Length: 262
Image (cartoon, rainbow, N blue to C red; front, side, top):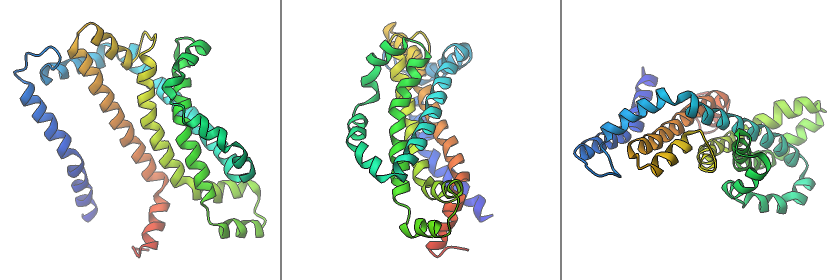
């Protein structure tokens, strides 16, 4: 009963402000005659139209490119992060290059990606990979380097097989920081998919927004913006659910450390 009450309280705490903002926007914009700020009732109607009429042609391609880009980012970030985290000398040698490349925003590589991959899905996936790869990589490295030296020494003293050392000690210990890095990458991926669809694209949510703005169809432009916000929020909710399941052991351990129930 206490758990249900706690979840209900958390839900109410999380949604009351967005709901209040939505109602205020609806009421205040109901009599608007502005071209740039149409009534919210018209925008919500357009959201339904866009989601049904343009889901396969625009929404789905954006989601597919976002999913592919994030998947590649996570795989590359964890794999290379493991290598650099376990070989300090290699990380030290490559650190200046990594810092240099990390400082370049993903959107700054759009012209190069266009030359290399054209205007298709490959270009959009490549931009997402370049931008979303860094948080996973750096958090993986930090997570591995932050593992207690005593734990590593005990593992070596028991001559644990390399595969077990990796899967049973290194990855679980670093997983809280890896998950935190992936969470940042999800938000970056949403930003980058929109930015990539602004350039020479013929499909996608960003394309809808740009084209409707050029045609002064502000209802559709606002609808595309709200769809982006909803998708971003839902992706974070989904990721929180995954994180909750993957890091259940970590929360239990932290609760024990803090004197919680054992």
